[in-house]
Amino acid sequence: MQTGGGLLSHGISVLDYQTLKSIVSPEELLVGMKLLKRDPSTMSENQFTAISDRILNGVAVEFLLINAFFEADNLPDPNTSYLTIATTLQHPLSRGSSHINGQDPAQSPLIDPGFLSHPFDAWLMVQAAKHARKIMSQPQYKNVILNEHYPGPSVQTDAEWLKSVKSRVRTEYHPIGTSSMMPQNQAGVVDPQLKVYGTQNLRVVDASVIPIQIGAHPAMTVYAIAEKAAEMILKSRT
Image (cartoon, rainbow, N blue to C red):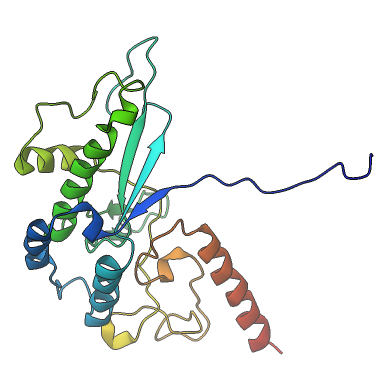
């Protein structure tokens, strides 16, 4: 190989994340703040404090451009190209559930993701969708975009937007939190050693121990949890 040849490097592509204050007006933010409240039946005070701080002072929404048709409920028109802008809440307050379905292990579990069940999440997703339309309406896109395929120009009011986002919300395949590592008196399931409270040697080592959404794709965090768990297990046996 010629000297200086064979260079290997990582390329990078970017995603656009925006803070809450950058996508809503001060007046709209006041409306949202009235909805930013803790539901004591689904979330501890510490969880709510951590999540609300990240919403207000960190990145609230991810805007992801996808060079493809991204509707699960419809088919694309033939011989037509599409561009999709997806909006993702980085620190949702809505909580769902996952439970066994009887005593047969072959039965699928009962899963309720609870998407947009918290009023603040529903409000913020509406604001994000409206901002996504604003992004795609910029002059720079006029030579690229023919029209808005979905939801279309008939959706204008917040009530119409809410109906639209609720009908289209779906998983991003980042479920966490059903076996949270927190104090037991705050509804925690595992301790800092990842042991289930009340057991001697039963550990949970997966994304379910993460108590709040981390505002990122969780794969690397799960790898780190697994590495740490392996280290703790080995130390416990020496």
